[in-house]
Image 1 (cartoon, rainbow, N blue to C red):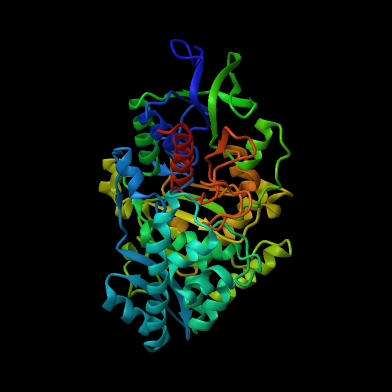
Image 2 (cartoon, one colour):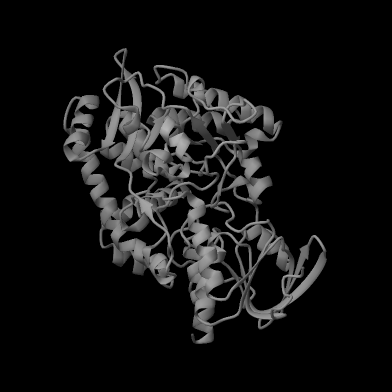
Length: 523
């Protein structure tokens, strides 16, 4: 059935792509009384922020791609009346290491006293803990001042600097490679590595990269919610996009799945969008078009020259376990260690070595990664029988694995990388992870891995980059426009992760594109 049967042939806004940002924009515009159509090529909305049952016959709904929430402003949840909640993790992180021939580690969380004791146990004194406190007090102040600006018109660089009102923080985060700050403030290699990891999520860079793309990644990872806390979405990531889809529909937006936009023709004041379905092609007119896709796809749709894709650099692994594995470090409960971020092979020198090896075209000898267990904080993603039997999920995110490494044979390289990544984890376990894996209805281990090339194929992320492009500074630069969503076509806006202040599960580009439209229309 055509998407528009019983509906308009022309809309105030057509949104290309039904990911979370597109749904945010649709809900805002529809609630403002505008007619809205969302065209989504897949059979469901949600994009990368979905929950699925990846293992045959197993009642476990996993956040298959995006998996934690930090950058979603509470303002959006309130404005749209979303039935969506998050839960805070009690433990921030655990990082195992072997020192002087014995297994130990660093547990951050469980209260100030517990964290202080963990630092002392690892480093033998107070210095590193005090440096940690000073550093994150500084980033916390920056978060409080910068995060609210994400849903405002773009400030200039000078305006944001005045808002931060801390010259040391500005220099550390915005002007010098983050590696300098890490080395100046911390002495312990493991502590340095834990700090640096937030600069490397989905970002292939050295700590001293002069482009400062690692600084931009670090900034977005420490400002979320004005606190930097990464929370667990109750019900999985799909709970957010389901709530957004409901909000958009309830406000009057039309969501047309199985409709792939293939061309946008515009004269700057009116546009025509050509879409394709299983039954053929159709067209729809719109005053504004909001593209919830990559900058490359935007260029393809409008007939412009696509920019060079930014390379993705991550391994995403989903697992279901019959039980959590025991740790070699017997002083830490696995339920605590895995409830926060479990860092693997992420010492400072290990990260530098892994980056150098990957830059030279080789898989890292000791692949760095981090793991967390969603079901410890939110067991609702598992069926009651699995909860009763003690099953748990694990999500692993590998670093420093750029897409170029997979070009020769994606399947073979992915399997080789997965094997060596899990070997790094096993080195800190008292039993092999494989012994804890659940099996699906066909008797296969419940584990799946996705390389950057898999994400490019499955989600149309150019280069497999989870941010659509290198993250941008959250201030205006030449050509960024008032809201950071503008394109060279006056009535075509970019509302995906590739917009300024995009990246992560935030809804910010969707909010800002909707605000840009409403501002122009005076509503």
